[in-house]
Image (cartoon, rainbow, N blue to C red; front, side):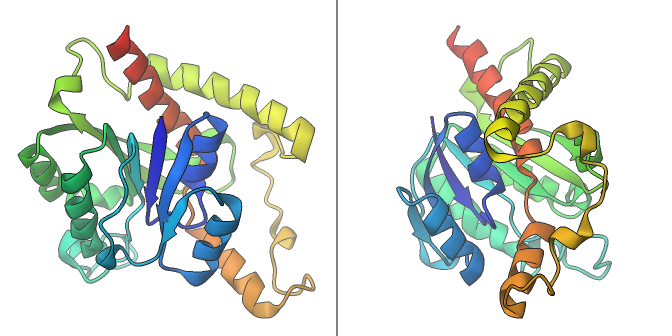
Length: 249
């Protein structure tokens, strides 16, 4: 399968896709630091910056962590899905309607349920997509911060299975087990920590007095701070693969 990441940030979805054997063929990210990182890390993909100026790229799975500034609880006066920043969803929808991916995976603040999800579901239904959604927290994966995020997965209605869904308990448990096995392998080759010690905060690893240029350190901190956690992305994307396997079998 192939993956196109919109509002891709520092590549949380793309990293998860790589671990699952899914090829990232395209990213769109307007921030200069993150855009350049994606170009270096996924050099075989096509990379663009401004979603307002692109027609996107076809792929089996689209992902999009579109801006949450107008949706988040941190901005109670935000205008939701029609706000200046979060309203960029409509640009992604334009690209979805053009390419009709097999799966769409969105990530945003849980407050999207009350500040735009109905609009998104209506627009997707208008082009023949069904959808599911659920909330996942980083603390479920052993991290110290809660960071609850809403994930919406949509697919053409003909993919709907009467007796199953993407966000099933069985698929979640299987995907979690696969993640733990993957982390163990990654840890052996790259020193990545296992889930059991992820709840220990190590703030000194990322700070502006590490010897890095101050601007670079600030860019890194911001990029990590609002990134899609690749562990969570791995589990959710693998649940999509499990669902696709059921359709094909």
